Length: 130
Image 1 (cartoon, rainbow, N blue to C red):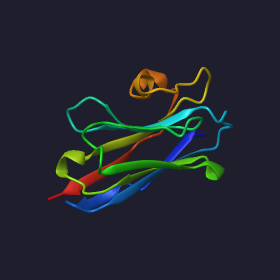
Image 2: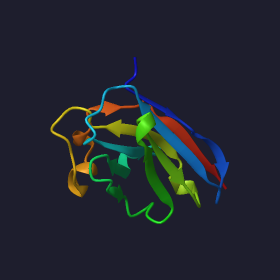
Image 3: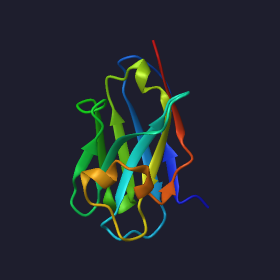
Image 4: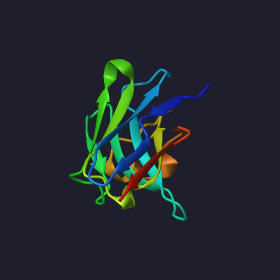
């Protein structure tokens, strides 16, 4: 059974908005970090955004800052990625990730590293058409 369940991907037009969601059924500590990474065809997986449950701090890649917003619903153990003003360069498979096992990441540096996360979703395709 998957630890992280993603939804919300699809085919959209340039300038449109889309929201991804990622839920975990696992018991969480309340100090963990959940984030989003993406991988475009022929490119390496890269950090997009992250949310730390304990501090409420958010972290963003420069390429999405001001356009994407990460948020959470603590009651649902769900993190959302609201994506606005989408561009063709945003086309990628988006992966949700979480550091469910302690010690937990709480800062910007670790939130941006893939090695921080011990649980990953299957990925959801986002295609931005021009």
